[in-house]
Image (cartoon, rainbow over the protein chains, first blue to last red):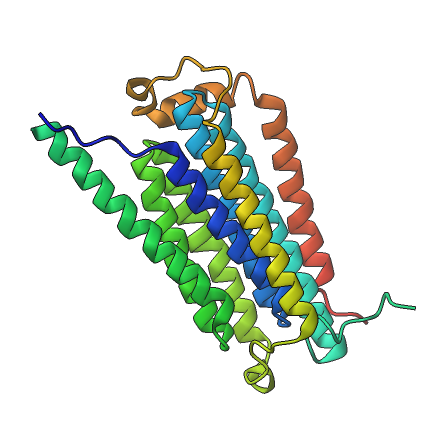
Length: 105
Length: 175
């Protein structure tokens, strides 16, 4: 009888790679700082997906806990990063990343 | 026969969620209006949560919906509405020389990832958490988190407190 094969882990890992690359392209090509930030969140999410996939197929719990810690760090990063954006907007009236050159000399 | 139908259904869910998540994440980086980007990002995160359910990790799926799609995107939308970005709506995606080079390098990076995934199947030490043990995943996560990973857990709590204090201090008005 014909048996349908179950989903291989390589497909999940490929999807994770594609999402990560889309995040990289967004972070490199956009000028709005908030969209750059969103691209970074997409990259973190793609890495989480590959962590959970490997933890499922290697039958280990470590990957799931790493995904948990990555989420906690992403939440902290969101809080501080968005506060920095609000402050930059207050002093410079823009959040375009190529107009923010305070550290350039 | 019944198992065949179950696995076929899993394939359908996987292909649908993968396709929608790629499309939505592409729309995140191409939309001109940041609010639209944020809403497509919610869609991406929900699709990834479906994939987590497909991988038998319910705890991470629920955390994904609550923390990512709920809290972080809500914070981003709140900040977008706080800032007046009307004048920057038209700047969008502009083709510049350096950006083309950056996109090309990112594409090469993707090819590297795909090659490394296809060339070799994941190897490593196989642990003791089989699918049956994982399907009561939340209890297992708690057990490992509060024994083996107790110290990183405490460090993360300190990090979150520092982030909260930092956000409050940064957004305080200068006198």
